[in-house]
Every structure is written in structure tokens, then in C-alpha cells.
Amino acid sequence: MTLSAEQIKDANISYHDAAADEYDAQSPGTGRRFVLTVREAVARLIEQPRLHGAVDPPVHGRDVREAPVSPFDYRLVYEVRADEILILAVAHNRRLPSYWRGRLRGT
Image (cartoon, one colour):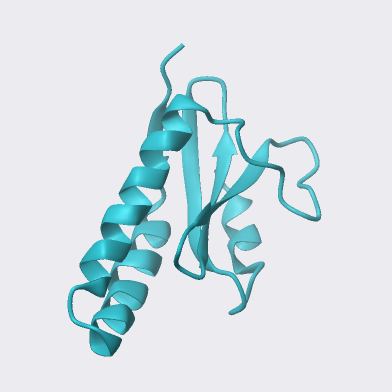
């Protein structure tokens, strides 16, 4: 089975606008590397969606997981569905680590 990856709009804004700009301010070119690293992580999820563990605490009745975006201090939070992967957030590991839970409503 081949899965596709969809991103909710807020997830894309979270990593692209905020983190990439912040990394570029610290070191030019790092923001672009961050975006490429996130894209590579998403590609790996499509191939092996259950490679990474469930979020802690788990989300009842849903297969929500998280994958590190190494070497950056971020992680992909995603839901594995029957025919797709929904990227809920590209979340910083220490800044508001559970803010993405509010995005589960209506998805």
C-alpha cells in the first residue's frame, strides 16, 4: 500500500515561516536545510509510517505518532490513517510541546 502525506495548513506555517526564518537568522542557509530535512522526514514516513512510536500520552482511538527531525530540535507529529498520513505539526521539542492536540478536532 502506498500512502500519501497531507499537511494541515497550520503545520506548514509552523515549520516554514517560524523555524526556517529563525534558523536563517542564526546561520544563513540553515533554514533551507531545515525545510529539506522536514521534507525528507515526511518522505520516510510515507515509506514506513509506523516506524516511530506513539505520542505520549497517547490519543485515544487514533494512531498519532511522532518522528524526530534530526539534527534540529523539532519533531513531526502525524496521524496514520487508512490511506494517508496527516501531518498535524512540526513541533519544537520544548516550546509548547502539546499545542498540536487542539488540531485533532475536526480532522
